[in-house]
Length: 601
Image 1 (cartoon, rainbow, N blue to C red):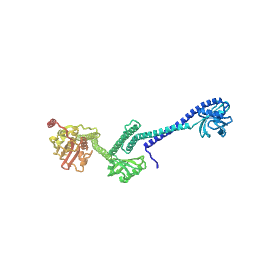
Image 2 (image 1 turned 90 degrees about the horizontal axis):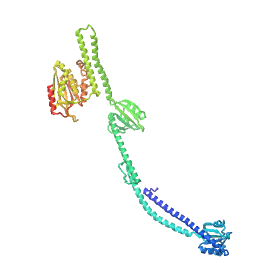
Image 3 (image 1 turned 120 degrees about the horizontal axis):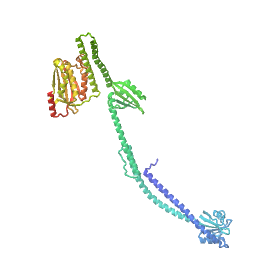
Image 4 (image 1 turned 180 degrees about the horizontal axis):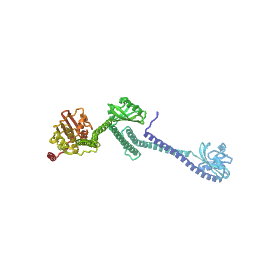
């Protein structure tokens, strides 16, 4: 089992081991240094005493070497030994005379060999004395008679003194070790406590709590570390918020796309969809995990999924799903899976159909008057043509030219409105005034057919907030259609009523144009606002209509934000109603002035 220590314990034990090592090294080092120093001092003292002993030895040449050794030993309190040139011990201050004969020959002693090299050569040696049983420091010097005088002193006292010093140092070191241990323990706790606080903060941040802060409030390295960690957490929090914002923006962008987006994993199961895709494929609930067959069983769809999961980039391909035309593109993902995008082009296909119908209808409408103009023009080239027929044919050419002009003008107006070239510039205008201006071009035809024209506009619905030119054209087209289809002696009525609120905060006025003509069958009502659509094509061309008037009316009304609809009963007439905005604020004086001006006109 491995012992796991905390950081403060490791720090405390490290300090303790370091201090113990310092105490031991100091004890050993001081002992060694002191021993070497004392040995050197003792050696120097013995050298001086040796020279003095040699001088005193020379003063007693006739005395026995053993007595001289005893005399010198008594003077110096050292052990003095006299050794003959052949190595025999002639005298020793520490031994009796009878013991000298039993002593070993000293010729091989290192200090003796060194001393015999010359008169002033001093031999020094530290070794164990077998005769005295302890370690001695020996210093030897050759005398004038060839004998070697050796002075020795035991080292035990010096060693004991060094040992006492070492014991004192060691004792002081132990006290210092205890005190330092206590200090290191407190220091370790003081150091590791902020570290533990930093660790707790880091773990909380790693767990997702990026709002957690260490906040040590220190100015040392630990404080800098805590500040750096807090800055890192703040930066991560900012980056995560940024990433979450970008992810939310991306998700909102994908969700708001009109194109359907489906993300598949490597196995082909649905990983994510946007609302458009769920609408296109009628997916209810959470579609995650659905297989491609559960999304759509169309072979073309499954073929696109198969190819993109195999890693191929699928070129745009058109699919049919629930009667809708879809343009599908697919892109494989680097980590496996794919993203598929589906664009609903049903409206585009319908617009293409409308465009083809429009081109065909426009060509047909333009061809009819052009054919008439060409035919009658060729007839007019006949010089023998009677004058009355010439005039009749010329009038026919002019009528068809006028009709061609009206078609071209209506086409230009419709193109300008649909392309955005028309801008509504609303102002407060009178419905009654606009109605009377609208019937001016058809007044002659109305008189010929004895058509009665009336307005029914209440006082509070008199004024609307609309573009005058647009409102005039709307009423002119509607009244023109009514004149065209109303029977002789018929009636056309322009009325206005306050409409019910639509929930947009604005008030609206409903304007109606009604006639008592032949009416329109119910099957044709939904399409009468299409370009060139006619409920009775033969009669419309006979009356000179272009088939574009109601389409222009619809676009102009919608440009004001309103709506238009039709109600008709065959044999009883047709009523077309449209909504235009009411003025937000209408000053009473302005109202009276506009009413007075309308009545004068």
